[in-house]
Length: 403
Length: 135
Image 1 (tube, each protein chain N blue to C red):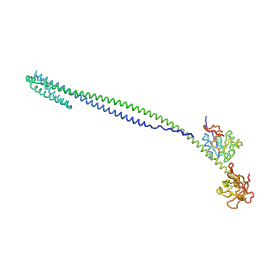
Image 2 (cartoon, rainbow over the protein chains, first blue to last red):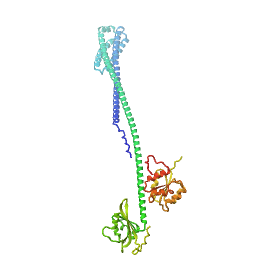
Image 3 (cartoon, rainbow over the protein chains, first blue to last red):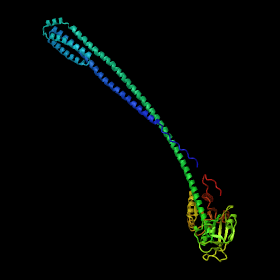
Image 4 (spheres, each protein chain N blue to C red):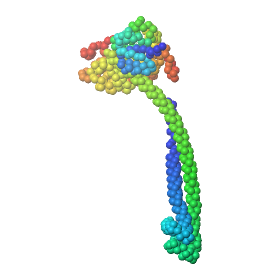
C-alpha cells in the first residue's frame, strides 16, 4: 500500500486582518473627530458672524445717532436764528421740536453706548454738553417775540463754540466706534480666514484619511480574496487527498476482504479434508489406533472403542501397552517401540487386548510406521481378530478378510 | 449491446462453501446461483442456462461426475469445473476425467485460483492491474 498523500494545512488566519480592522476603525474615528472639530469651528464662526453683524448694526446706529444729533442741533440753532430774524411762531415751534429730538436722540445714544466704557464716557460728555446747549436754546426760544432781546442774547452767546465742541465730541465718538468697527472687521476677517482654513484643512484631511481607509479596505479585500483562493486550493487538495486515501483504504479493505475470504476458504477446505480423512478411518470396521513414536495413543476409530469397551477419553493419550500388548513377553525395549524407531513394519503379531473387565482377549497386531517425509512420527496399529477363534469375543463379529 | 453478467451455477452440499465461493465470484462481476443437490441443479439448468458450472464431487444423493455427465448432453458447450478436496491427483484427473469435466481444481487451492480458472474458461480478461498467475 502506497504512503497516504499528505493532507495540506489550510492557510493560517493572518493577524493582518485584525490589524487592518483596527486601523480602519481608528481612521474612521479620526475622520469623525476632524469632521466634528470642523463643524464646531464652522458653527462658532457662524455665531461670531451673527454677533459681529449685530455689533456692526449697533455701531452704525451709534454713527447715525451722532449724525442725527448734530443735524438736530444745527436745526435748533437755525430755528433760533430764524426766530430772531422773523419772530415767527413757526420758527419757535421748529426750535422746540429740534430740542425735543435732541433730547430723545441723546437718550438713544446713551443707551447705545452703555455697553462700552469709553463710548459711554464720551456719550455722557456729549449729553452734558447737549443739555447745557439745550438749556440755552430753551431759554432763548422762551423770550417770545422780543427780537431785540433775542438778538442781544445771540450776540452775547458763544454757542458756535459749544456747537463745535459738541460736533467734535460726536466726531470723536464716531471715530471710536468706527475704529472699533474696523478692528472688529479685521478680527472677523481673520476668524473667517481661520475658519476657512480649518474647514478646508479638515476636509482635506478627511479626504486623505478616507482615501487611506479605502486603500486599506481594498488591500484587505485583495488579501481576503487571495486567502479565499488559497483556501479553495487547499480544500481541493484536501478533497483530492481524501479521495486518494479513501480509494487506498477501499483497495486495502478489498484486499483484506479477499485475504479473509482466502483464509476462510482454506479453513473450510482443511476442515473438509480432516473430516473426510476421519470418515475414512472411522469407516474401517477393524480396530485402528494411531500412536506417537513414544507409543501413546492419539486416535482410535469407533471399532477400536467398541472392541476395547471403552470411551474415547479412556483411550486417547494412554500408553498403547495399557490397551494392547504383544503375547510374547520380551526383555528390554518394547519391540513395538523399537520397530517404530527402526522405521519397519511389524505384521500379524499375536497380541492381547487388555479389556476393561475379564481376561485379555487374543488378537493379531500389525504396526505400520507413520511417516512425515523421511521421518517416522508415529505409527498405525491395526488389530485383527485371532483367526484361531479360541478366545474371540462372542459379542463381536469377525472382521472381514483384508483385501 | 447489453453486457449482462455471466451466469455461474455452483453445486455443493456444504452451504459455507457455496456462499463463500458465490460471494467471491459475484464480487468479480458474475451472476451466481448456488444449489446443494443435483436435483436443484437440473431445475436451474432448465430455467436459467448457466455459462459455467462449478460442481463438488461429493453430493448427498449422487456425485458431481455423474451430475456433470448427465448435464453434458443438455449443455454441450458449457465448461465445467470439478471441485473437491478428497480425490484425484490432477494428472490422473486430466487423463481420466477429461471427458466429464473441463477443469479440476482441488479444494485447497486458493479462491483466486478458482476465479482465475473461471475467467479463463469464460474467456474473460483478467482485471486491470491483476498479477499474472500460472495455471
